[in-house]
Image (cartoon, rainbow, N blue to C red; front, side, top):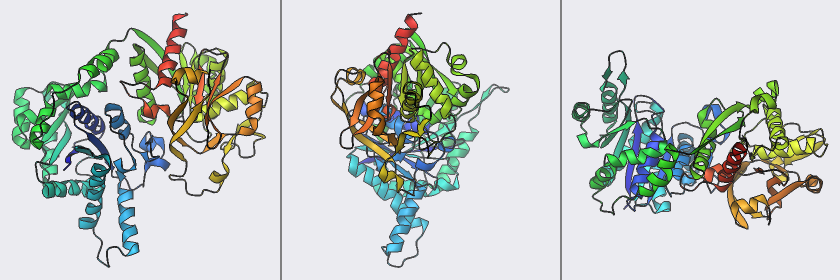
Length: 536
């Protein structure tokens, strides 16, 4: 039987439940246990696919094409678990499933209620993850904050599962805040007490407390939290801010959190194996030899979570190159106003990420032109590739009115356009080209050198494609099409030969990068940027 860990949060949002869940998964994996992780999101949207990045942050795409919460990215980066459409569940999905069953008559005319029907659907989703992943331990993160009305059905399902399976098979972890009041020079435990009290009113007694704090927790403070929250003192885990999120598994390991969990579940496993993680990831992240500045030219740069996987992939590339990557976040509209020369001066590389809509597109195109002409390493992702094609068409191929039909439907030169089947789609949710697709790499190209493979598989999330009508003309002008989706002859990778590093891809390589296994596109991008910096 699988064991289950539920991670909840209290006091305030953004305490780091996702990182906590991923880190617990990491330390359990280090004990040779198979884990899977899932996220419950309380919003009524069916998935985040149609949500504005400013509302939700990044949409993380799984191998099977599910549009999910960004926390699934943390799960995959920290562990070997591969998430699927089953690993992210929203309130919208639960109610949609229950209402569909009711309309079919599956409930035989019964009155449909939150308890037991909604909670039964939630429990079924949890057990489905255990079944599909064959994990020994399933970690389920419940979004929101204890006390929020939206999260109550998920918490109730977690309570019921604990009752059904018994305490040896279910463990509750509560992430809470222990604030330091500067003017009083005191650490306050009352917010944690109230948060745990609210959780206990729901019927859940936490077994472990993860205490986010600025200051070290003394024995006296831990004893107080233990007494008032009815949690063993050794299970009051201090979680101070660290320089790198990849230190957190080590912080939990130092406080024997893995032993606490294994003891609760009455499991025996090998000793922890985190030495390579500490040496190859944490030490390199904290003590790099080199430094490089990369410009990320996007539309949502004021929100850290909008490009979360890209930022992490750049960190991974820094680790792989023994460098600290400083990201200069540039709003593409600033380039439209001030010019690329002024805004991008001094950077070691330019990265243009994905996105939707026309706002800021001309700024991205100007940034790409600057990188191409100044021989600055460039990496384009998804929309970044499409912008690179538009820039090349306008400024190298002399197709001055070239554009994407997404931005200008009646453009004279539609170098980027919709596939025929996409034109018929009316519902926007879950209808893009999503998930993993194969890509055949052309020999003797930059892509071939980077990947060292003839066939790769990468994750996609887009609706528009390069228009093959312009392919031969682009090739005559020096564009190399180094990656193709063979089944549909769709362009996946473009590059320029007479450039130190100019490559753009239709897919999202950031979703497959890990701190101990950096994606090669990011690794070589930072390597090229470092080489440029060494020339000056």
